[in-house]
Length: 113
Image 1 (tube, helix red, strand yellow):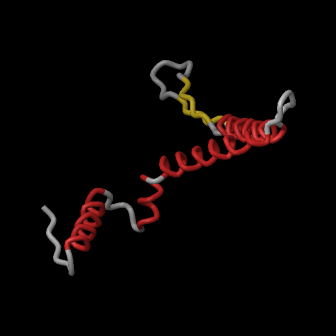
Image 2 (cartoon, rainbow, N blue to C red):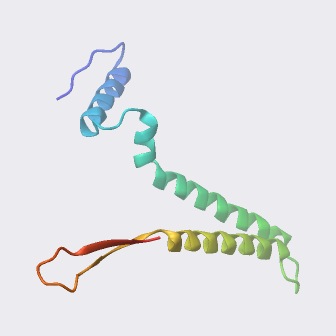
């Protein structure tokens, strides 16, 4: 149990939780690194929600029997982002382990760049 004295209950809880996080992650030297470890999923969700909201807002420009160019442009942007992300994942080097032809020798490790 971690015990701290502070000017009030809330400050004591904050100090205790910081100490527990330091014990859990001794390799982390600053709080920004800890936020990057745990905060990434939340930021992705917020970005996704704002993107969804912007598409909903673009629906107000829709006209009867005509294509909604605002939504089509947004779709084109999203498709370009997705294509770029896929291209970046394809460019990452892959490591393969190849068994050598000679018995008793060590397997070779190659990196494709």
